[in-house]
Length: 157
Image (cartoon, rainbow, N blue to C red; front, top):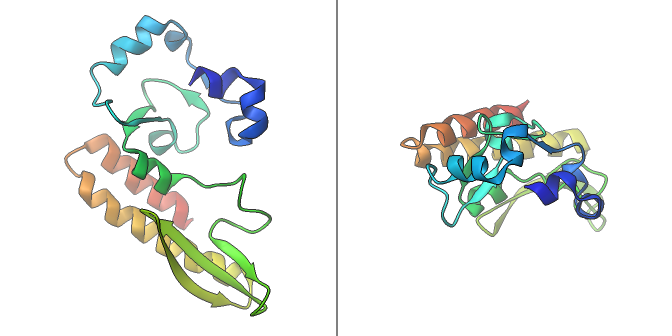
């Protein structure tokens, strides 16, 4: 969390963390630890996005520990995806835009399209539905469930 927020070297390789910060309360480790130990944290990843909707601050209000697979589902891969929107690639052989989505290590091909916009719409619909379906597995964990529903809506927009 501190490295992601304050290490310039880390941000060079991970530009999505530009302008991230940690709330003043958590800059004192014992305060962060006191919050952490009452969470279900073991074997999970600290996430600030699912509840924060893209906020750049780590804080008790918007942070939650989630399984790494769930964190992967919500990652946008901006650094590695190139010039096209998430889930869209240009297929040089076919001369069309290809939409695909990865979940749990499995890639689902969503089709080939004449325009970037059509491919992006197919991706957004599929991804939003996937996140919404995944949310059903977390109904007993209210904060995660709500965060996933909100993430689904953000993806669809």
